[in-house]
Image (tube, rainbow, N blue to C red; front, top):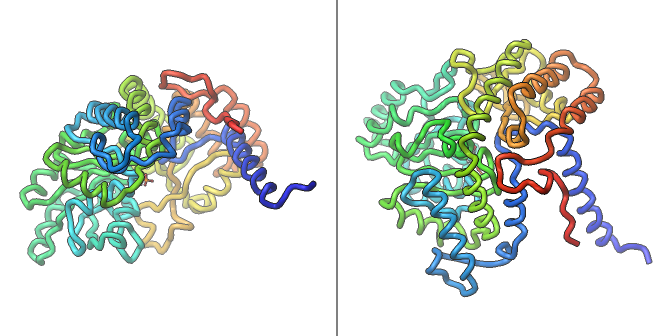
Length: 440
Ligand SMILES: *Cc1c(COP(=O)(O)O)cnc(C)c1O
């Protein structure tokens, strides 16, 4: 008998999954928000924890069946507190966006003003205005004011921010929250420089470390909780070692407000398999995170310098291009960010287009912005070092500047990629990073 159409769909899904994994064994993955987890993190994700509910706080759940789950969650919280030197950790938010929503809900009311970076200045859509469907505006009704941004320094302008807060105060619109951190994030934000000032106005300071959590954990970026941030929200899968998820670090002082907003406020299931995988990733970060993060920073700098020397306009030149895992390149001399992204993909080089300062004023939009963003977190986890960054820069030049045949570049990329299939900076590396696991 011929297969039913649903059986054909079923088979098709698995063949697509396999093809994706196979493709990713042969690409240069440069999406700054992505990373590759260890086989250990993948093992935790397929455990039975993923089929359970554990609402509430460990030890005080509203369901039975949580004996082992509670033990893992206590371990996860202890590891998180140790890694980030925090006295309180809530490991339940299922993503960075949800972690931010927990902060908005716990420490502000709809209609309150929040200071945040605009998107071309590096902000994330979860900090955004209602008219852009940004989470803060659309979901929690926050009224967003942007930080003044210095495009040459590629960071928030301290003096202009102070003046803006004073003006907002005079106008009766004093911010309730100040959000630091972002998605295009080359240099540390001035938390230390602004925290005393903001606290004098009783403004709650959150640092969104979604992108840089792994660098903070490895002591290679700023240290927001020591610089005056009241809380830090993170994603667990960008520069940290996965799985996809979120987390909040703070002090005991804010524990009750955060816990209540997370549950029952913003989660029911907190994706228990991912919680277990977070615990594994945190243990890996405590053991290997410092070496990893320092190699990430070296690689980003090496890639930026190589691209610059090949003729690309790399942002942040005045400050040495980058102090994080990211690089931003203005590609307007060749085409636009959207077209460059598409051409690089055809050459097995995966990047994303990026709005950069000046784009909105010049009438460019998200589909055809002026830049691309590159991140080195994943390729560093695959064991690449400075010499590989030079090769990657030359592949990018071949596609974007020299307009070489992309099929030829694909075969060069495949060859280059052959020696980088295992995940480094982890305890166990039996399985290849992209190896497909069949359970059926
Ligand atoms: C990626 C990102 C988020 C969202 O994280 P998810 O885990 O994808 O929900 C939040 N804030 C910033 C600054 C980000 O870059």
